[in-house]
Image 1 (cartoon, rainbow, N blue to C red):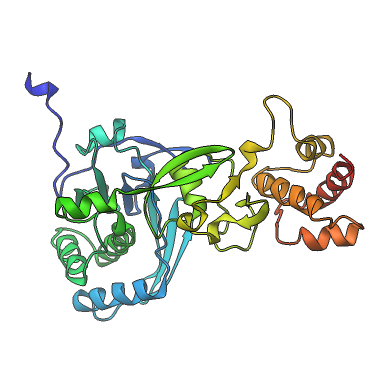
Image 2 (tube, one colour; image 1 turned 90 degrees about the vertical axis):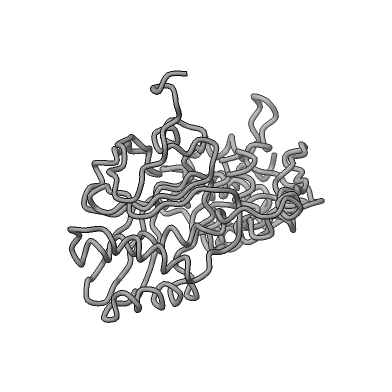
Length: 344
């Protein structure tokens, strides 16, 4: 084997990260260099990420207070491919999070982590300030966060604001860290790899056991049924509606482990081959969608609304469909579709 054929080593702290293209959640393609001026977190695994939980913010601030006593994070909010954090003394800081990167893909090859789960923190100049790769493990202790911050602080020629940027990015990476940790004894590792069965659309799937995983994430990230959409992830918009033992549920509020032994039906299971479900046909006929993002959840709820017998009047339909939000405002078409489909 020649030197050129050897797998590259991961970029070291202080190295400039290799440029690459990534498809953002809105469908646009961005190169890493297009994000210059902002720190970036790269996550090579399916992410289950909520950086805005108050206990985590308090943990961040305890660590940040040791290296920058006059600053603390006031608020963190996640929006698609980035998060915004309000930092006292600095204002709003934006961090881009490119997650669910294929650990066996071309980008993983560039970063020398093929086949591994890995996290990289890049500062606004595209320089690696912290990284970690390895097997599944537990939540990182506070001293791991302090160690990461000390690595960030060592970066020379970085302004105070750039340091805050990189620190917030490190915290974002730490919020992803339940998926990555130190190697464990083989017996424990085998226990973590246990799987449970989900019966979806009449087919059984084996899903790696994770007591924290929602049914929504199991469907999308583990099984690959992406018709069920992740909207608010808090049970408020209905985009993730599926049927569980014949009843509609918000799959973001159901743990995957709770669904074991139940029959799950998703939007992919409604049609029979090329023959659409009557509600699907009615939605098309009445132009009951615009952007289409909420449509799978609307259709699943509409099917249940009809089966439950809540279609006696337009007002009754509106009441029993009120848990599904359409930001495009296609409610009249949805109402007309349900009224037509209820007789079929």
